[in-house]
Length: 362
Image: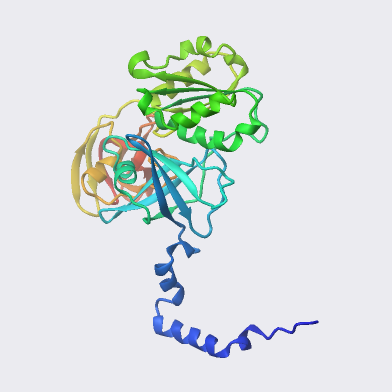
């Protein structure tokens, strides 16, 4: 039996005419705009997600379960996403590691957030956000990932919330890793994020877990690694955690003949501190004093200026702002960037500090 389809234009003529009438009445909005209001996850232009659950991990950390909208692309374990939340009428963007398995039947994704002192977005997500909240999303990115062919022996070194990208890897790749050692540091036993899950993996023999409680055992010293992990020289290493810990590891790897070290930083490594100066925000004609250690992004936000932002660690370029005139210092390299009016110089405010008087086009 053959089926002959009518042309789309003649299949439902009344419905088609009503649709065209709705487009005219709704101008400059179209019916799809109103559909976005009813179902914001359907938008094909702005990627959004809806929080469906907030699960406590520790006293100051929580896993945020999100239903992503149409257009979400699967991540590679270890990657992060930028999430935008509206707080007191201002949209704030931050980057968080994805911790969810790729094979979830429900298609949900998770990020695990630790509330840090004075962390506007992290405290909002952990303490104030509620299921049902719609957030903005970017596609996943980042290269802190495992290779397609995993090394025979792997070492993960993590501290605090640095466990989050590694947990993303473990949840997705543990069956393909033959020999895994995880060395994790946290102030106390109650501060270990994913503690029960990690201990279960260790109990089944999936990994060797070494936990260091820094309040009683002190900070991890790179020189102690060979004693803690006797076969260190045979292991490729992935490390994520506080800046100080990563600095020590990178210095140690630079003077030893070890297999590659891969690091993920949640904050940029700072170089020499600039001398500071006055910062003028040209659009608002506001001038404030700034020291040479505070990123211009923080200076602006503290002064009440609406500053674009993203990852806050110099990766996403979401904070790029014109430097009208003056000088700033890159907090990672110490490099000075100067501009005169009309030069069209752009700077990343999240990793730049005042190096004398400067004016930003904000």
